[in-house]
Image (cartoon, rainbow, N blue to C red; front, side, top):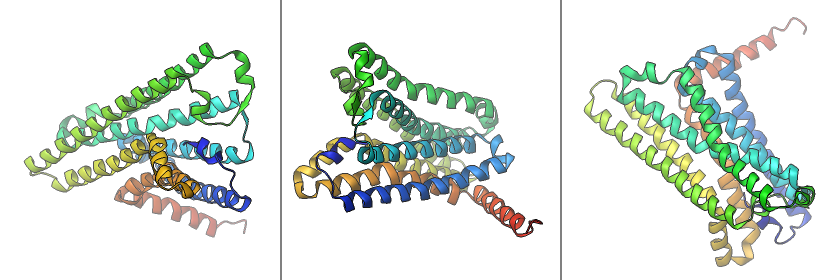
Length: 309
C-alpha cells in the first residue's frame, strides 16, 4: 500500500472519515466471513487431514493478517501521521511477510491439484499432512527473508537514533536506500515470474491430462477452474506490486482526481482481493459448503435449546 500518496494533500474531515469508515467496514465484513471459514475448518476434524484444505486455511489466515495490518497502517496515516520507526518496522515486516506468503501459498495449492489430477496414484504419498506443514514452514521462511534482509541493511546504514524517531509509516519511507529499491524490484520480478511460470505449467498439465484421461473429467475440469481462479488472485497480487507506477500514471492523466484514484486503487488491490479466498473454496467447494452450513446450523440449534433461557 502506498500510503505516502494519501498525505500529499490533506483530506477534508468528512472525506477522511468516509474513507476510514469504508475501509474499516469492508475489513470487518471480510474478516467476519473468513472467520466463519476458520470456524468451519476447526469445528470439523475431517478437513485437518486433507492438505488442500490445510493450505486453504493457511491462505485465509494470511488474508486476515494482511487485511488487518493493511487497514491499521491506513488508519495510522490519519490518526498517527508520525509513528515510532521501531513500531512501524514491526508492522511493515509482518504485513510484508504475510503478503509475500500469498503467491507462494497459491503455488502450493496449484501443485497439490496438479498432483491430484496428473499423478492420482502418488497423491496420498506426496501430499501428506506432514509435507503440507513443512511446505507452510518453507513459505513463511521464504516470505520473511526479504524483510529480514531489509531490516539488517537498515540497521547497517542507519544510526540507532533513526529507530527512535517518528515518521509516516509506509515501507518506502523506512526502507528507502538504493539497495532497498533495487532489491525490491529484482525480488518482486523474479518472485512473481517464478510463481506465474509454475501456475501456467500446472494449468496446462491439468488441461492436457483431462483431455487424455477418460476417468473423472469433471474433477479435472474443476481443478482447472480452481487454478484459473488462483491465477486471478495472483494477478491482483502482481498488480498491487506496481500500484505506485499505475497510480502515478493515472494521477498524471487525471490530476484533479488524485485522492479518488489513490483510494480506489487501495480498495481494489488491498481490500477486495481478500474476498476471493472464501469465494473459491467456501462457496464453490460443495464439501466445505455442506460442513459450513452444518456447523452454523448446529450452533444455531444449540442456542435455541439452551437450558439457561
